[in-house]
Image 1: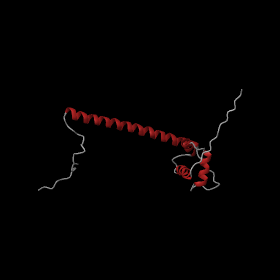
Image 2: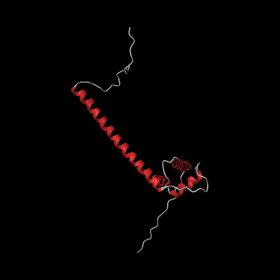
Image 3: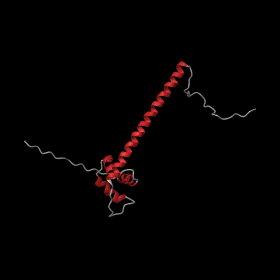
Image 4: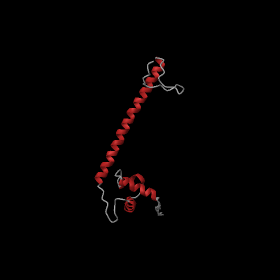
Length: 132
């Protein structure tokens, strides 16, 4: 027995604000149409239609041509930036953990309480006091 399977296509409606936001992201140069397609799951044809409709830069009847290589380079550059920021964040977290451990050691072994308590009044800073 042969079963027929039909794929039900869903029709999605997007708000005008969403469409304009995607066009704004495209016009800012931060994302290409292909990247917006992948990020938001919106077909690239729809994004192009929205660009033609809502864009302040592109005129009706003008063709938009994107260099695929430049889009790929943008994605790679952004991925590298994310990796660098994650590495930097990890280093900062290690430093914070180390300093907190040093504060605990100072409190236990040297009996010095470095952490400020909420009831402690704020210090006057490094202001010079007038001589009397």
